[in-house]
Image 1 (cartoon, helix red, strand yellow):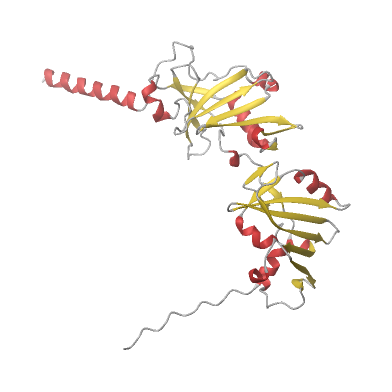
Image 2 (cartoon, helix red, strand yellow; image 1 turned 90 degrees about the horizontal axis):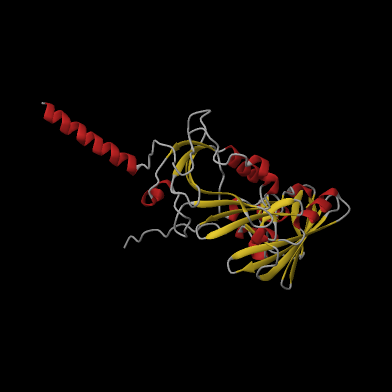
Length: 339
């Protein structure tokens, strides 16, 4: 009986060790750094944030750089186009507050399970680096998989590892680390309600279409002789600037010009939108003029930028007469032959 008990205990011990390695668990603090549960990952970092000049996030084989430009933080490879300032603030604050909860694996073969391997094009980890004005690292951290708790008032945890150290950790805190620039853009371009548009002129090639208000209704007025139009499709021209958002942005124009649209608002603001096509993508530039707050704000924010927008916006900004026609009714299926 005693021999059987010893065998069972031995098996349990082997299984426990195997599980510990499989899930990357280590119960002891790192002998390399002396870190223990409850300590900050980067003690004293909060006092150094004022010296940060650049934030790099390396992941999926690319590096996203965020730098200070004209008093705001922006994307380095987009000529400083503004990022979401609140998101960056959350990232930096989260890094200063990140606390170790327990040690995990120090075996490089197990890093992939936690997402703390050195960043590669095919991996899931991200390397976060804060740099000073001389390019010297202030803080560096490999950020792995997150654990978001569904219970209320329970903080998130995340797996991390400092570059050059074998030990990985589970840490408590939130770090919105994303290497995809599309997740950092200030996405809103303009939001001009269709009801504020008094008239519009669309030019595409040699064709010019003119629209105006007829009471509360937006209608096509030129050419005077034109096919019957669909009210909703015509109204879409007035709503082209409504909830207008970007999917990408560049400091230079992209593709070949398709045409332009000039919207005149009821307060006298004039907004000229030029459309370009690059492969299948639609890009626009905006120019606002007039002695109004809308014109000044829009001009200051959009001057010098080309925005990629949804492809469906082509028919809102530069429709053809065919685009404005009512949809053809669906033809019924042919009756089955009785022969």
